[in-house]
Image 1 (cartoon, one colour):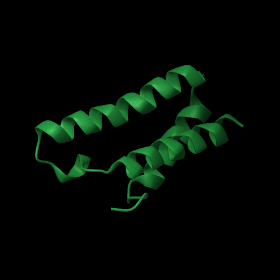
Image 2: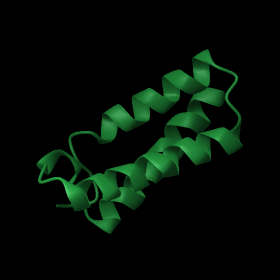
Image 3: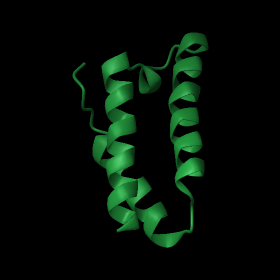
Image 4: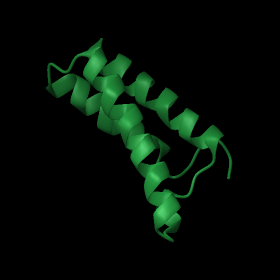
Length: 75
């Protein structure tokens, strides 16, 4: 698996829309964004689901894409 997945554009859109439509702070954004990636990682340890199986590079890329979406949504 490379750094991007089919869900990468969805990550961007979700955070772009949330930044546009809410008053969410950067602090809350980072907490939720990282918490979701941690949740996916923990879930993948206990359940045999290919939905949450990602490598570290992909998880890091997800967070970078989240930041880009949130940043552009805030502009």
